[in-house]
Image 1 (cartoon, helix red, strand yellow):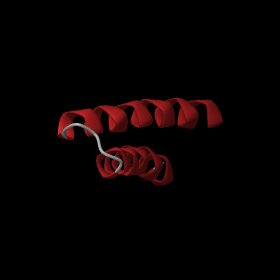
Image 2 (tube, one colour; image 1 turned 30 degrees about the horizontal axis):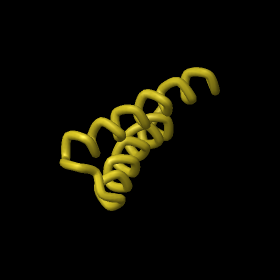
Image 3 (cartoon, helix red, strand yellow; image 1 turned 135 degrees about the vertical axis):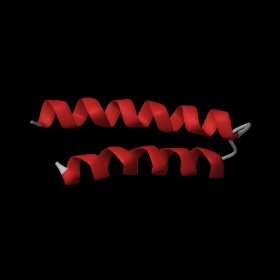
Amino acid sequence: MARSLLLIVGAFVLASALAGLLGAANLGTALAFGQIALAIMVVYVMIRR
């Protein structure tokens, strides 16, 4: 359970940071990419179980 949560939060943080570093227009755009990555990781964790 803790590993799954860490994967989900890590995906959000990593995608947001990467989008910011690669030149997202603003913080909201970077967080939107983080939210997309979070949703994808949630689906991955659900399918894996």
